[in-house]
Image 1 (cartoon, one colour):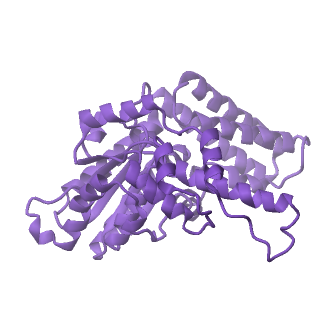
Image 2: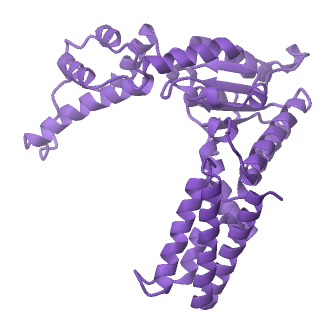
Image 3: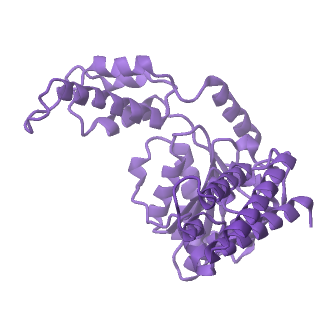
Length: 389
């Protein structure tokens, strides 16, 4: 067992004992154990300053310190049972662990997104249809099997999540969505169990005849290159590798797909990159896509006759889809604000004035694109090096 693993184990042991003593009313001994847990966590942070879970360790240490203050009569009184909500998942019973660390982590709601809502991105749509939609519709036409790992990368706010949701709707798949940062932030040994359960749920759905998509956002948080790693992080990465290989190696009729999304593809580790047979750039919207986006986001707004969506698309070059949505929202909020400031809002019949071209131009002059030219160049370089459409 490595030094980091020993420290992790010791911190868990001290904290478990502290909660037990706390619940029994043995305040003095509980305080001692909380203090030992804090010291061990801080030692772990000090020895491994680049470890991804350090933020969680510090938060945990602060929670224990606050509990010490309460037990010593400083701060607001609290029942010992309140610590159950703050304790590490390893301290909970299996049923409590399931509720706290998996069900809250994973989104299983069926997405209600269709292809029409994914504006532009024709190349990405085509690649995803070839990899997922067509094999589901006619598996008999694919004697060599089909890709099961799809990596979507590109600037934030350009539709990676929408693409994954739309394909899930298209094939009526079970959609299991999780962000990798949440997986990694779970306490110590719980994270790899969550990864295993994630894939188990997807396989079960596929075996019952319903395709399954595992969508992992912020993939770089899970399988990014690390300058140093300690026990928990290594185990999670190995578990993900094992589960991904299991899906790829299973019978060719298994319709389980892993779609990973990242804004930082250059942070991914190569052994994991090659598990994603399709690597698709989700770029900033082009001129025609920006026109469609302005049309989509303004269709329920009251526009003045001078609003020219083509001109708005021209002057918003470099803006992402979420940037354009924010521009439309900000312009709308401006005229609503005017209505309230005029005192007319109390009249339920009063409506804000129509949005003018100057309203939109004013917002665009005050905003900069969220994606810089240097970042765009980085995406294009990585795409040229690793693309697989």
